[in-house]
Image (cartoon, rainbow, N blue to C red; front, side):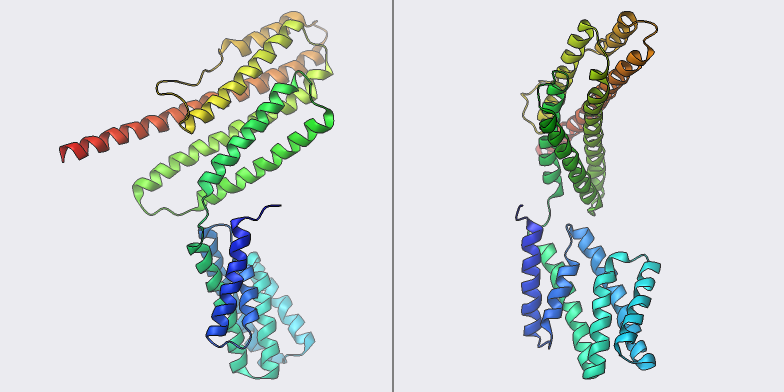
Amino acid sequence: MTLGARVLKTGLAVAVALWVGMLIGLTSPIISAVAAIFTIQPSIYRSWKELLQQIQSNVIGAVVAVAAVWLIGSTPIAVGLVCIGVILLCLRLKAEETVGLTLVTVVVIMEARGQQGWLYAADRFGAIMTGMLAAFAVNVTVAPPRHRERFVKHMQEARSSLSRLLRTAVSNELKEKVFREELDHLKSRMRQLEEFYQLFAEERVWRVSSRLARTRLLVIYKGMLLTLEQGVALVEAVEQHYFAVPTPQVWNRLIDRQIEALCGYHEQLMWKWEGQMKPGASASAPPQEATALLTDIIAARTEPEDALARARLLVVTAAVFSYEDRLRRLDKLMEQWLQHDVAGFVRQRGEGTSG
């Protein structure tokens, strides 16, 4: 269990909401803290979107609560019926995420009106708005999320985990339990990477040049994700089909070398992306003829009547080809990005010298 930035910012948002509530003299500052907890989000864009949705839904909830008190009173049955209606209304408006805090608004306003009047109800609604604004301010100003750095870091860790699995898949050196735990952990990390990618894609960039650059960067990151997915597909293909049938020794040696070469290629691509390779050095791609040779060996060394064995080996070969194809595509995308950066740097230096 880790103490992340979002956990700390949630605690800080609660503290700020309570402090502001007491500073402006709210009678129930604790409601501000509850609203801050509901509003905190993992990104600035989602915080802004959540704030707008919460304001809209809570204003509607407050109006419904006031109208309900006039029409049917504030008995427990009335509050329950109004909550049901507000839930349906939020679902109708496609604002499911705001249901929780909107119900808090409805309950506190109806309960307050039944006890001390409209001014007390307005005070509680103000407390909710204070909590939402406090959470948004904290999320924007304190440790803004850096989704790009998190994505690259987790991608490198996932790539390392994938290499371990691929390098031991054919040799079958890991215990079944350890292998399964490693694979499950890798899939869990991939889900995190998808979330980081989505958060980075949602960020708003106002400058046109920066927007274009980020769009190209998103294409590369998507390529990294697809490459990782193909690597996992290769691991699963080896696990399901490689050991299910007898295989020619020459085919075993060749696919072992091919997988090792692809792992090294993937590793070097990440080195190149992070600027760790020497100037002029390039990632060494395996020869394209190796995958075709795997198919030829299957056709030559398996008996004609053994169609099932041939099909299983072809599945593994196809997974190798797909992984290799994705790596080559990723290499081209990275090369285009790096060449564009170098060209932009040279152009800027030229403009600076001429000035």
